[in-house]
Length: 229
Ligand SMILES: Nc1ncnc2c1ncn2[C@@H]1O[C@H](COP(=O)(O)OP(=O)(O)OP(=O)(O)O)[C@@H](O)[C@H]1O
Ligand SMILES: [Mg+2]
Image (cartoon, rainbow, N blue to C red; front, side, top):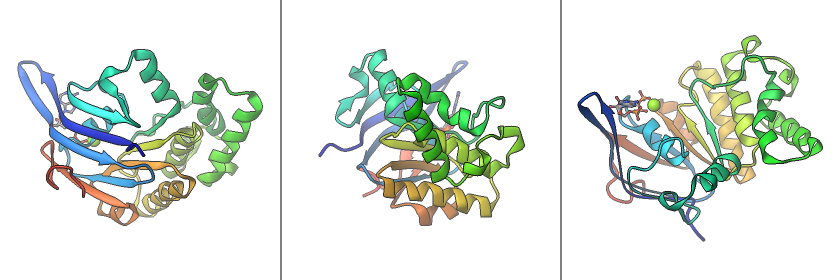
């Protein structure tokens, strides 16, 4: 069985004027399907950079990421788009919802590009809203919702794709602790549906919801090579 992800010698740097910021240094990380992996590290340690690479938001600069046995560096733009569209659900800290669309429309938005019938789309939207516990808010727009409800819509939107993995970058960072627990429970419940979750956080609360924790510091995985064993 192929691993969900296998990262080898991953390096990534940002160019800021004449300065180079090395955000990831020689990162090795293997993630198996079905894991609920938590990436912990202080601010600026490289969590978002790593998740952006895993989510095909930033390109691999050096090293390699294998996703279900496919090397990202060898994929065409079309193949990458296919993975973004069908395989990866990305959840951002700031939700990134469309303010003018209702919760249900936000969830449906990405499905319109998947070539699904209207019936199948409606079924998936209803199931995803139900899975995150906000069916009653389906017709509300984000400005009429609480932070926790908005994050649930963002999770439902990722979930409705039926992705292989949900990547969540500090999904609880802007939420109070009670709402954070609710959101972590929602993410944890996805495991029972066979969805792998990779999440970043510097909130200790997240630890008890993970099946495995890896630590990153100054762009370097702390658990040694093959981090997180
Ligand atoms: N667009 C950018 N341009 C230049 N440097 C960047 C950029 N994005 C991130 N960095 C730098 O790269 C390093 C890693 O940043 P990253 O955003 O991955 O950290 P993080 O662990 O997600 O932090 P936080 O917990 O604050 O979200 C930091 O030193 C950061 O300043
Ligand atoms: Mg970040």
